[in-house]
Length: 346
Image (cartoon, rainbow, N blue to C red; front, top):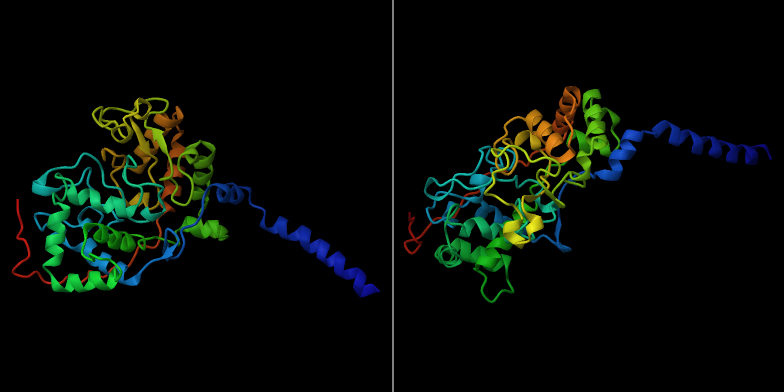
């Protein structure tokens, strides 16, 4: 009788003790808004990532022969050694032309709802086609890409293995799918913030926790939420007050160029903040080099408030906690060109 009466009492005490031991309002608030980056991505659109496509996509990602000049590759602007970006205001493209916008990081891009600052590509496969055909960037064409890849026997064999059911394995569309399969694996798990979300209270220091609270309480998380702390929705840049023209150039109207809807003027996809400490300069214009300045600008432009200096410093400390484990990438050995491979052109 004694043992049967002690068991429910012990269970009752345990049920009260456990929530008290783990209660953390800050963690609960953060967990409702954000999710940790997974260790790896194994599926795209509900289908397992094809390993042959991933391996092929890795080679294509690094191959400059996808560009007309044979100088530029995907990695040129989305460098896997520098946070998945190129750390210049706007990327340098074909013939030393400069692009109109800052290159977003490729890391964790698979988690974005759409690609590019204006969301004109629905996924990484569509995104991969854009720069290759852009005259300011890689300045090539689908026909030239197919001709180049078809002239290299190792690529022909790799496409056949990666797309065994395709009537035309070497195609521009399959090239994009292969690059997407590779880029989807470029994720950065285990940042201090991820570890905190998973329950390690010591993963963030005191200043970073203050920054997390200020980030949420000030309203930053209204746009920068979810697994990527952004990348999921569109907002006007200058919701309350437009920033200086150097930061928000009047000639770049953002999503308006895609939708032609007046209400989309100066609307952009909320920037994903994962690894943001590694990807300066900031904003689509690439004109802000310091995180503290970017945070202060966003406070004024989006929230209509001048953030206190301590809040800015604390938020910057929190943003540094978003730097995850960088992919360890070995540069692939690319197949050799042949005498029928199109030559570089200006």
